[in-house]
Length: 272
Length: 309
Image (tube, rainbow over the protein chains, first blue to last red):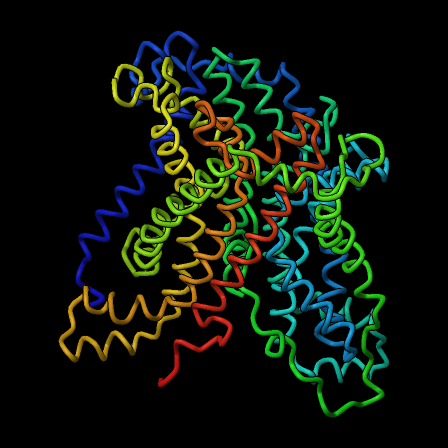
């Protein structure tokens, strides 16, 4: 029965493809048209003349500055997450103390914390730390809220490392730090890549923490800049579409080169 | 979105300590855990406690929060609009779940199959996952614009964001567009893990595709349905970005949900103390919902769908 084509499922899949495809097509098509031509033709018409005017407009609005801010937030969040989470996962799997077991339970429960409900106290904490309106203010809660899932996925992968390997390292006289460096990290490369990609995607695309914790245009990240483009480009819809497309472009490149890790990272959210 | 996953029973989550406790094996100490605990404690766990405290204060966003007792809570339950906002929140949550779950199951099961173009198609299917919520909301905000959008000139759809039911429909469509790929991914992974032997046995028994789907695929996906539903429901109750950016709670208050109300009361009206009561309600409701789902679905028992194999 596996070989018989399933027409109903196929039809549904095709419909879904159209639903996904049309908005993306319209976005790309409008972004390369002039303000006049996108209105003259129907929304689904092929762009007649391609223009780079919108690209120039978006670049002139400080886009690269916002992209740099987003890149800094993303890189720092991924680095900090891994530096904190890898040793923690290693300790949860290998340490025999009650503390490591309790910590793991706290992180499991932590998966259920809705970030939206904590924005008011976070605003207070960040203000008291004198960090308001800085990229650090965005990075710190991003890392904290990412930790539960990241640690869960890393712990799952570390459980597969056999005791014999740890014993062998010990016999060689290795301390815990060398074991982490030479055994744990190499053995969990796949999981680290997956959680790293997942963290990067979340940090790049986040909106809420930058919204409440930054204010100045010099600290603005890409997602927030889209809302200001919306004001600025109220009638310049093609310019708006170009901005939306450009924010997603780096992620799209990441998808092309690291699709496997990205999907694995996202699937990890539900599999554990 | 909020990341929620069912918490397995702790006893199972942590394996019993290895009985053979050799002193010679190097083990990491608590220092390896400390940064993670501090980070998570300060920026995720402590705010949960702090928000409840703030709900008993008159904090305006600056200065020191002053304790005022239960005043905010009394005001919250006397506010007439609260019930309207709560019912909008619940309506949207129900609509999100009812649209996303069946479609994700069907698409996930399809994507787990072995069709020829499946790899290419599923790569396209997951494209919405790459876009940020802000990008998606603003893209559709333009696409639904009465003057320049794709519906211009098509009368019933022209001003979809201008009517209450239209705005709710539009939000359900956009949030579905964004999150169905994610749930599809979960179902695809789970459907791939269903042993083929079950389908072979059903075929021998003369079961058709529909029977196989209904009596094998769906029961086998039970745990994933619970996981995905929990993520969807708890995520929807606290969902903020798309609504904020696409309709800003409008037209009127037609799409104003609890998280939006919390945001407007705090970061717009500077009544941070009062807004903290709404935040506390969100924490309590989200926790209660996940506990109820885990409890009544029998998921806490973690019964394996592979039993009897």
